[in-house]
Length: 307
Image (tube, rainbow, N blue to C red):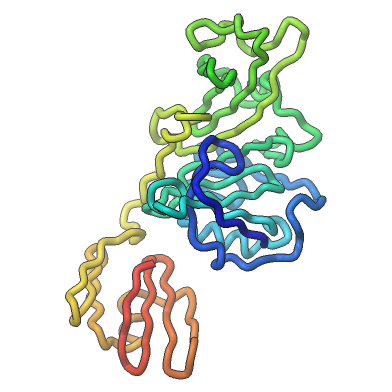
């Protein structure tokens, strides 16, 4: 898997603004960016996600999905704002497949999926395909597949018309000679077709949480994407209190982990770790992704670290 560490950038393209964990956490694979590979088809789930990537998932789960399918996700760019990593999104980008994942920098949970090159990724919705190298995602085909909706928003500055569905939006570039089709930012006739018989082709698809009425699209509309609420009882981002030199107290579950606790004590309180990594004979640590923490043990001493 190829990785790239980028400074902050602006705009909504494949190199847009971001943030992410160190690319050293992702191994490098052999294939170079841009070399030919078979077309990829992913299931589109409006308001939920695309393929194996689900809105609200932690970034560690996204990397796990990438690792499980190296033949598909073998060129990956990790982008973030180096100077202030908590200021802008962490972004995992797949340049060969034309889409990227935007993670909230504080919670490191997926808040937005953007398809910036619709010709590189084919989407499956129900039994229909849209996008990819052979199926144009035109305004007419999108409207026919997803059904009637309210008029969208026309961004005069970008020359872009965005059509919205719950948890899903499609952006279409509009030639300047046809701006007269729009009145007060809305189009009067749907499905939109120009006098010459052509129809605009989607240049960007956004998938976002549909629990709010926010309209998410290009430009400033991208910032309206919110992170889905955590399910009741979730331990993700659980508040942890530390008594220096004494113990840790997990507020939701009520567990107390005293310093000096044995590995068996930790397993009993927090459950089986998802990984055990031995670094030396006297040093090893337990990784608990569901709690976003790990425990190091060195010469009888217990060391706690939040991830």
